[in-house]
Image (cartoon, rainbow, N blue to C red; front, side, top):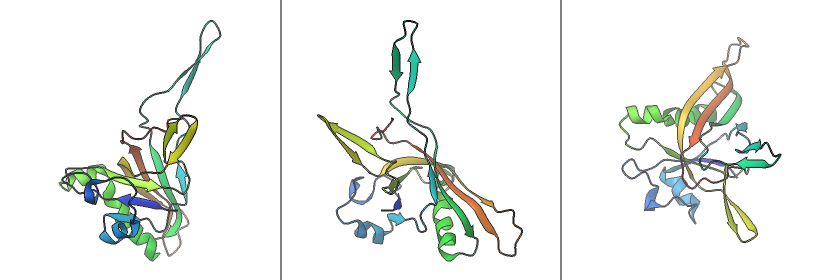
Length: 179
């Protein structure tokens, strides 16, 4: 149970072997550099609630509207890491260049990355067959909007980051968990 980033092939936007599904042998992709497990994992996540709007008609009926796309920002947040913490520094070096603008500036033709997490059980798709609902935690194509960090105002000799934030929007047509 972890948080992962998948780095697509710049020309095709797909993982090795052209598939976006969880591979049978995750260790192969982890070792290839195409997938990185984020260590340390986020301290918390900031995901919006269900996306639906309820309206009451003049006759008193309730109409529920539900959009087909959810482009609201979501964030993975790390809190309280000192600047010199070795795994934090490696994490920062991994996530900092993920911002879609930076990927475009570096000449990458595919500005998206793929994220997957199965720890919070909130970043998922839903499959319904008959009366059986199945939750799936797939790789989702995302656009990274912001990668930032804010220093703690303690003023100590070793800088500590109050918050490090990776903010993204889901751009994957397979994403259907809209509430």
